[in-house]
Length: 110
Image (tube, rainbow, N blue to C red; front, side, top):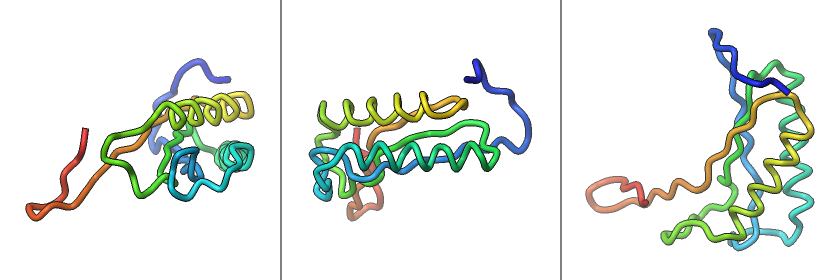
């Protein structure tokens, strides 16, 4: 595994959009499927020359205004660890950026 990022231009970060996680409206009941898909995507990015990968829970849409629960954080940690163990690239993550449309335009929720 790389111990740090070597900044070069262009810098390629592959984004892994996780399938719906536990507690998400469209979760299919199998965290194993989520993790296997994330690992497969990460391996494709690595073979394709990515410098790093980033996982996020975009598959959880529509997002809850209250934010993410512990089951989402745990599932993201499980997927992130599996990705980190499967590839030799740095791995980052981000959980739910919830945006709703208001009469005045988009509003980012805390």
